[in-house]
Image 1 (cartoon, rainbow, N blue to C red):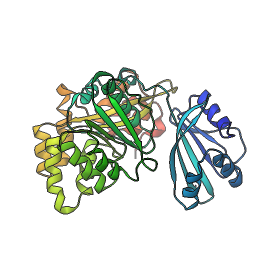
Image 2: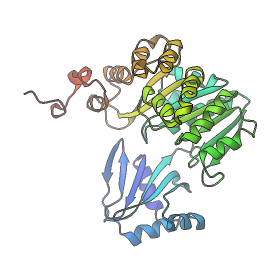
Image 3: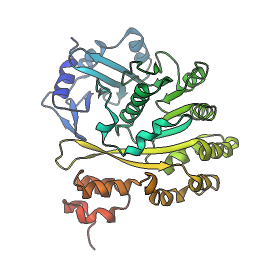
Length: 360
């Protein structure tokens, strides 16, 4: 048993989502959104390097020695499975362990709007799930892939960095490929997947122009592509895709989005009222003729107006979702205020007066 397992086990016993280990500070746990240090000494450089050395492969050690960050998965018997990022900082090394549940959650347990589940029914095109790091994007996508895996006979290829949830082939065939282990990059994985008779492709992160272009090609040639972006709204997601393309391809990018992008789901995680958990809050944009015209005419700033008026088909802005959750006493109102775009809507619900703007 690796020595680092003791920290991971303690974190899991306290229902932490992440375990942070870094030189110069004690181990810290992410508990319901807050980072909390445990009662332990500050970690030393040699000490932490020794802990990590016990779980790294020879090739991983060599790669880290060359100066590269590492992203990999780690499984500890009796403790669980984790996504790991190992990096260097000014005072030494650091690592973050994100717990990955063994069982893929059923969509209904995520308490997401039911319309999101229907996005798994598309046969081709693109669906984006976006948000900051740690907002549950991977969990939502895993749930959608699992639903397809149970209900359809498809060839599903996932490109991940690293592989998180493990999908056994059920009604579908699921082929999971990991960047750095099975392929050198997302774009290479996409290029290869088009020769592997896919029906559905999951792209763990659309990081660069080449990956975005390959994902667009896959989506417009008869495949269903699920992708993620580190963006915080539907409008910013569309802007990111267009801006990432070379100038001469941006016109084609707008046409692609207006015709092949089905939906954008943007996630955030907020504290529950009792402070003992977190709840997903989502903005949902579903492509329609009006939004497509806005993209083509470079009026993306008007997309939120279309989302706001599209509640009848399941669309919602983040602030709309936040307000409903606050009124239903599902999330902490102070946390909602901090995450809201239009904070005036939430001032009446705030319980901590220090959060409110001071009167002159």
